[in-house]
Length: 149
Image (cartoon, rainbow, N blue to C red):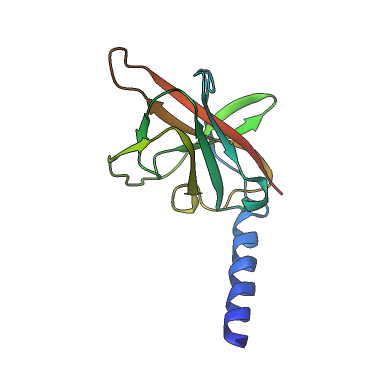
C-alpha cells in the first residue's frame, strides 16, 4: 500500500513539474467556427480535468448518426487575448478508424499527454471533427472549453 501511495505522489509531482513554468509553443490563429451544427454538442466534465486529459460528453440530437475519427482524433487549442491558437506538437501517430455516434449521449476519455505533454495553467478547448453521411453529407467541428489550474 505504501508503494502505491508513494508512486501516486511521485506521478503527481512529475506532472506538476512538467507543467509548472512551461510555456506552450503556439501555432497559427484558428480561423474556423465550431459548435455550429444543430443538435450536436460536446462538453468537458470539469471535475475530471487534469493537465494531461479529461472526460468528455458528446450529445447527438441530430435525428441520425454522426461520425468522427477515433477517440484520439482531436486537437487542443489555447486561448490568448480572446483568440484561439493551435498548440504545436511533435510527431504523433493516429489510426483512421471511423467512430459512429448514435443518437443520445456518448462519453469519451481524452488524453493529450502523448501529443502535448502536461498542459500548463491556462484556458483551453478541445476540438473534434465530425461528419454526417446520407443524401447531404456535412462536416463540422465541435469544441469544449476547459481550464487547467
